[in-house]
Image 1 (cartoon, helix red, strand yellow):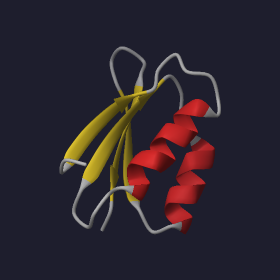
Image 2: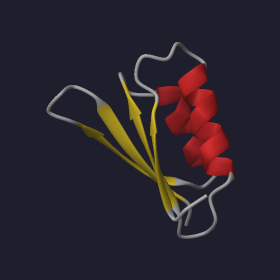
Image 3: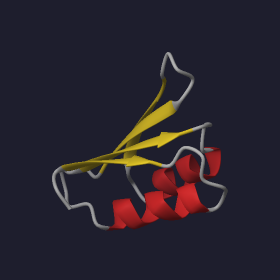
Length: 73
């Protein structure tokens, strides 16, 4: 994976956005990041990221989409 990748998971039905996010973070090397774009806040994903030691920063965009920057420390 490149140092930064964007996954647009808007319009996908659960659990597909969660699965795509988990696949992406599994491939991250230290210092790499991925941005996940979704239709809603993924609270179950946040719990898993916290448990596994990833940093994340959610942002609600002007268009209503949720953009989450996920980084591997």
